[in-house]
Image (cartoon, rainbow, N blue to C red):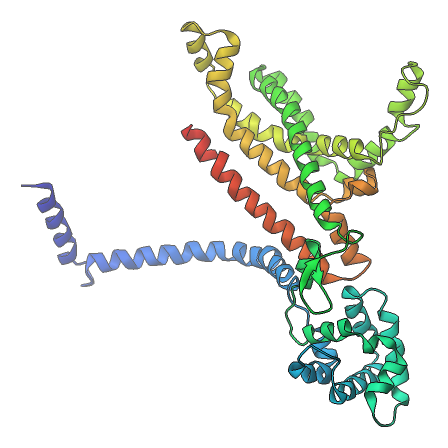
Length: 424
């Protein structure tokens, strides 16, 4: 009897077997399995809801805010509707100017003229005050013609770029914030062009953020790998004591550790006082409010995040591997490099990736220890959120940073991911 025939007989037997209540055993087993899955899902459901509320929804809202802005459409409905048939060549006709006067008059009565001016000011700087002034003066207009009257009230209503902006505002969706975040903008004819050099700052900011993150990751690897190796080969009693010293930093706030570095690195701080007392330097070295201080402080804060994954992998490597290589004639360095080091690559990959991703979103340390040329993307997100209240730009910068992080993670995982490292 073949194996296939035996399997067929067992399957048929399960189909024909019935329980005491007359229900086939196979159906009853399916019901039990379904009930078990439902109970498992019920236990996991609170965690899923928590993740959706605290993680997925805020990120989704941020991504949506980068492309959605209906301020002009909501606050200037007549104007944006009338501009839908404008050919964008010359200035709009009298009907559009009449709609503009009505919208500004209503905005002044409802105290929303400031919001209109603020939104237009994002794309055309220094226009906000003129919009509010126009809204105040338009209430004195009793009748048309409105075109000449509005241009007389403020010259901005005779500029083609202003009307191009208002026409773009007729849509609830805009690419302005994303374009501005990569140093592009709309010109007077709504064509996408590069931002002027004096306004093109964001590409440099993203490159700076990437450079600082790579530098900190490399520094933590150079410091963390030898320390992790030392912890792995020392006796358990000593290594556990040293490991507690490493873990102590997790119980200290990032803000407290950053302030400690400010105390240490300032012009007449502890480090400079010691160096000058030893007559190594005659005047204080500039250790703070620059790139050196930023990288140094971030390296100390991020070191445990790189060290611990490497240490956990090293502890799982059997010492017999090195002994076997030495017994076969390999020297100490060759045995370490060819046998031991490749087995640590999964820990190196995990630790470096964790540190790099965390560094991309750093805010407190660069703000307190770095100088004006060390501000990272997160600092500008905070500025647009807390000071300028420009949620569109904050969302766009955050969305680009998140997309870049996910893309880098995908590429990293494909090139030097843990599975590929283990296969190698």
